[in-house]
Length: 189
Ligand code: FES
Ligand code: FES
Image (cartoon, rainbow, N blue to C red; front, side):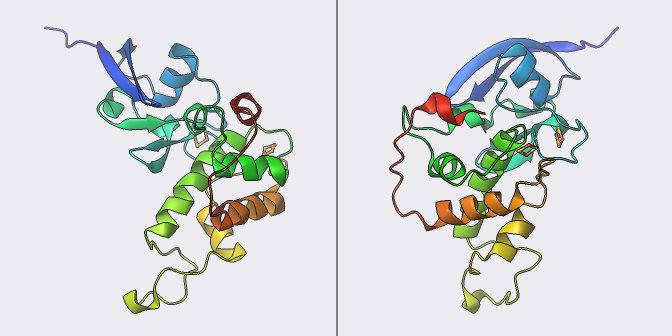
């Protein structure tokens, strides 16, 4: 008897259940872009190398080209379209706008999702490969430009907007209030 090659699944995307039939080989990236019309998430390499397809899975960043859609059932999926709070941009989105953290913008949704994950990981005290003092009593490392560059190193930018991206992530980390003022539509690259 032939095994089924497709299933009807429900993905929790940006707080909403989305039910769709998928071939079992469909990546989460293709399901988001081609089936759910969430084209903010970009396809760069499709091989886990560039970070353009980064989304948040249960709050952790993940490259959606390396995840099967069927395996994402039951997870909380957040794409760049789901970061803003109504008409108020996420502080990371606002910082990218304010500090020109992009040129062509193709890598920007992945950069922003990754930066949101970075700030969360840092707030939880996760070290990086360049963290000097790993003793628990040393506390969370300072989010220096070197730390930001290391933590964001999975996200490539062919335009080379790295200096402004680092500035934007640092600015978002420093911002104490999530009080952005622009419209949501401006933020979704
Ligand atoms: S498209 Fe997924 S890492 Fe490049
Ligand atoms: S802004 Fe063009 S690839 Fe990053």
